[in-house]
Length: 142
Image 1 (cartoon, rainbow, N blue to C red):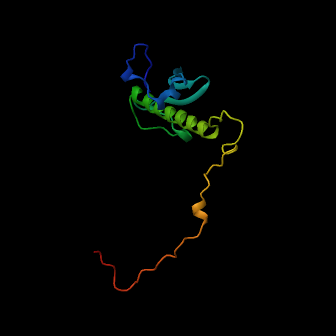
Image 2: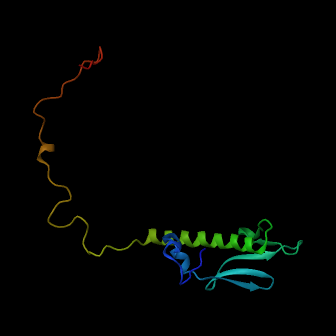
Image 3: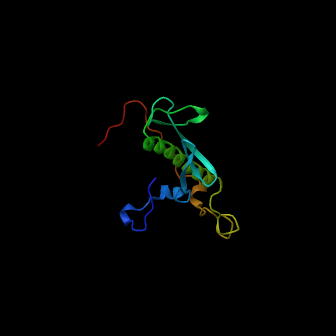
């Protein structure tokens, strides 16, 4: 996740797919010896110290499993990346369920003009029937 800075130049601005993350306000807080990632009151992940090795951390995965060993920065980054993916997925799901409403109250094709222009030629039979080509000798080009 990129940090927002008032002095950010135009080429370093946050792309559209990260706009969801700006409003999330993800914050790391201590919980005893653990670190927990919050967005408001919602918890996204937890980083716990390894029980055997000092200075080694693990992120808690689904079902209470622990990740591989890593330093604190890498373990926090793994939790942050998972939170970003979840927020992006929720934003896409929300957009798919509630698309922007049409500003007009009537249907798309209602009105005086039909959706397809009338074509009188399509309804008339052909003047000459189609000729079948002989299937035997193969066609030669002149």
